[in-house]
Amino acid sequence: MDLSRILKPGAVKVFGQFTSKKRLFQEIAEVAASTYGVEGAVAFDGLQEREALGATGVGHGIALPHARIDALNEIVGIFVRLERPMDFDSVDRQPVDLVFALFAPRDAGVDHLKALALVSRTMRDANVCAKLRANEDPAKLYAILTEARANHQAA
Figure: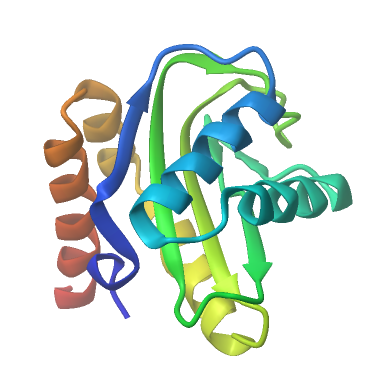
């Protein structure tokens, strides 16, 4: 599995500033609807429900919100780079500026965990994060994300 299978170029966005996770999740849900045909309200509710179980801010300015959705047939991703970091109740209490959201079919099981692990490994790479933070063009961000994982697999 590589990121190009779960992330479409149109699902990579750069947003300005959000004052709440709720507002960010609304935007992510809209991207899920327009890019993958997921019902926006269902995507939003899924993200909110998962976040209520525990914050998905994993530290170092990165958040990995995710949700399982009945209507999906495959795992899909959305990457958001925030121009202004926001509070995300992260484990290290640092604000978040890189968000990679995953949506998986409710019965995805191990595949959902593999996708989360793949995204997590990619986002733990300090060089990848530095490049993501240095670029604002969604096409470049997509290339950075998909090439980074391909390089990890080749190593």
